[in-house]
Image 1 (tube, rainbow, N blue to C red):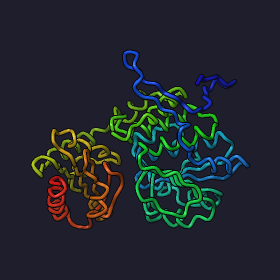
Image 2 (cartoon, one colour):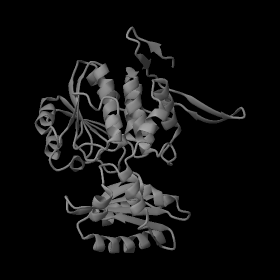
Image 3 (tube, rainbow, N blue to C red):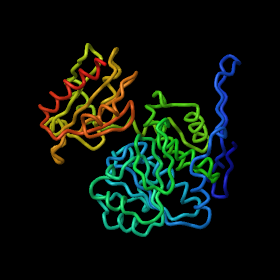
Image 4 (spheres, helix red, strand yellow):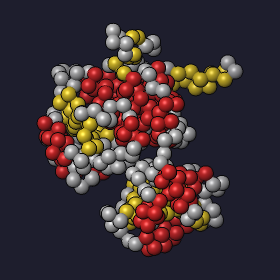
Length: 372
């Protein structure tokens, strides 16, 4: 797959299906051939190819790297195909994610800050994409009616369990590493041109949702997508620096405060950390400061499940994050106990109790989960 230069000097790559061979000392160890599987959303490609469409892309509340990356990556691609595309985010992402190419463009709107414009974009759209969420409630209370009651054609691209019905086009696969990888799959089979901005955004989604390619969800297909994105102009080291090497002092203070609260239970198989509303104020909390914190306790030898509780005084709830490894299913755990869900190894939830009561319940339920 060879890049070529346009007259403007922009490097564009014609996306094709990729075959990757990994060899060690001349011995073939893995072979991935995407054409062995049905191509996702080929019926959507046919519909979009008929004419230029007005499209809107939505994602979940508190958009993370995969949400922002898949949304902007798809937007760049579809705009390059001649469609009119708007991206509506429920609320603003963290400061590092706002540096993603295209975020500051006029076609990206934050509903909590530009309500009228965002709702007008949805109202005028012919098609709506739901990226990286499995139920309309994930977009937040204010935006949910606009998504749930949308009258045009609806597209779901998501890797969470138990998605809502009612979509006209669906690509739902829980084994996928990220929604960004799934958007790449769609682009690959659609066959259009992938520019560097789209590649950057999708690579960011891959990096964030795979833990920099270290999680078990990484497959040959994931690495094939990453290879194609690099060839299209994505620079992984630049993205990594933008995401992980530009933090605020408040983030370090908060992580230190949270890690100092570390508790181990179930004979060291379960871990719990927390931050109160007072901790957030004293450390100067900024949006995004606690992203990734829940993963830290999993680095402790023997820990199979980690929980992080953060008090949200404005919402009047305790926000919960869960991570696991081995045979521990935190999606089922979050659904059963904490009004949440997600993936087998990564899930979220909430508590309407006080922090003290929530921590007591967490200690009990985590002890039981870790003992299984």
